[in-house]
Image (cartoon, rainbow, N blue to C red; front, side, top):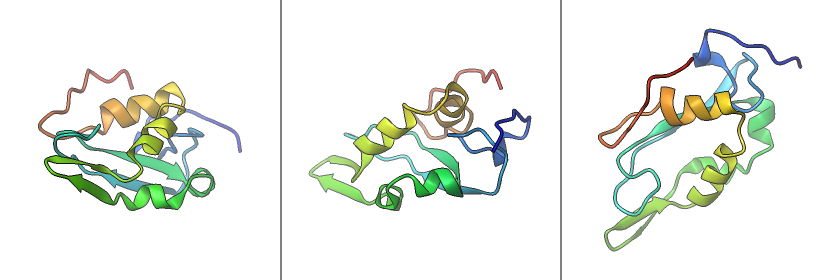
Length: 109
């Protein structure tokens, strides 16, 4: 599959950057102790890229310990996202970010 750039980033896989039917994972903002403290985003992957990940990551089960909360596989999620191409990271960390603690910069896309 050939990678091509598009202006329609709502339909692009954040890993291989192709415009295809995708799996969308909505990651809601959490509270204190989480890397997603006060901000959420979404991750878009084509079926091929999604199938190369661990589907348990995307169940987004929440672990709570007193006042702290985080996603069960939060470390693995951030490790995966940090390996995405720069355009995929831009979409994840900036274009699709939301929440009271979201600090998006002006998108270059």
